[in-house]
Amino acid sequence: MDKSSTQEKSSPIVVGLDIGTTKICAIVGRRSKNGKIEVLGIGKAESAGVTRGVVSNIDKTVQGIHQAVDVAGSQSNVEIRVVNVGIAGQHIKSLQHRGLITRRDLQSEIGRKDIDKLIEDMYNLVMPPGEEIIHVLPQEFTVDNEPGIKDPIGMAGVRLEANFHIISGQVTAIKNIVKCVNKASLESQELILEPLASSESVLSEEEKEAGVVLVDIGGGTTDVAIFHEGIIRHTAVIPFGGNSVTEDIREGCSVMRNIAEQLKVRFGSALADENKENEIVCVPGLRGREPKEISVKNLAYVIQARMEEIVEHVYYEIKSSGYEKKLIAGIVITGGGAQLKHLRQLVEFVTGLDCRVGYPTEHLAKNEVLPKGTYEELQSPTFATGIGLLIKGIQKMEYMNEAIPAEVKTAKPKFDTKSKEGGLLDRLLKKSITFIKDDIKDEDFLK
Image 1: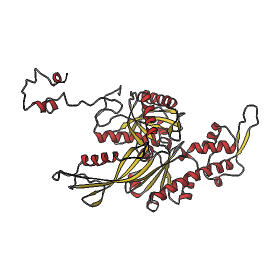
Image 2 (image 1 turned 120 degrees about the vertical axis):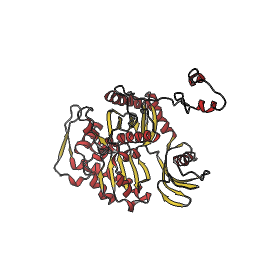
Image 3 (image 1 turned 135 degrees about the vertical axis):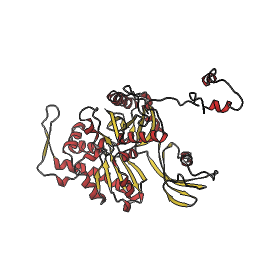
Image 4 (image 1 turned 90 degrees about the horizontal axis):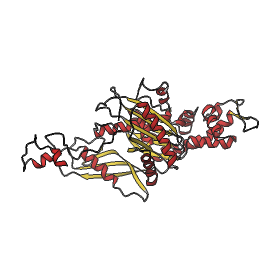
């Protein structure tokens, strides 16, 4: 709970928790008065218990979550209890499905309840053993055989149909993430697919309408999400990322892993031809050994080979989605791997589509309270998923019209005991019993 002041109803405080392969990041924030996202605190920790987006060591992951959440909590002066968690990994699958309901109440117009019922029905789909539905995303609706409706609320109709994009994952992988969060004395408000979160922080509505591919290159995985006409059309998770590049450098240049990571970050390039032949990097040798000389061009050849493979995988997903010719906005790359030099040119060369790097700056409001340099650091593509999880959490809270901050978990009362009018007890007893409200309160009946 916010210790400094009582939050306004319109701006609940929400926490996004990105459990990545290289880092665990907790971001605390809320929507500011001008509609932007105001980050109140951020905490980072090394992620030692996650491999290719999937939890492989629960204790190490819990330790990382504790560290990140403690830093973010103390920075924002907020006691964090509930978080919105990202999920990724090779086990993620997506499928298209169609659902329909026949409405009995012909007098009323189609409302949010009808759509919620349609979505709820999709969650009851029989999945293959060991798989669980994570997201059900409606695409176009059909009302009484009238297709292509994006928002049917307010329309009259009997037969409501919809195409759905359903995202599923392995039950064990989902349970392990939830277990880590619970062991860290937290509760997950919602599990959110990471490319969906990243798309919220780096893509504009115009791009989603025009047709765009989001490619989030993380440490362990590369996440792909394809949008067209404002609707998500395809999702995929490729089990290669920045760590695969680091491993290739370690083997190709025969250096230690930490040296390989530094070489990638400081001297790495995705296009070998952009580097000069005579550029040499000197790497200190192991205890008592001579320093090692590495050609920057050779380093780029190693990186280019792996990055080409990742981009080819992305291009395969684009072609298999069937939207290759409909992507006016091209490709947006984000995530830590998007910071690699000349990667944009490589993506354009391999796919033939326009490409830009996505920064999560568009939605951020400047917060002077944050420590010096934090706001600038947040503008890195590395934090696209974390900020996206925060935005998704805020949208969910606004959708549910919750008046309480996300990190304060209180059980909802089964019926209103405070108001004298409209309580369930009042409504039940009004017809048969008359009592003096001053003498006997509703609370007396609840004991």
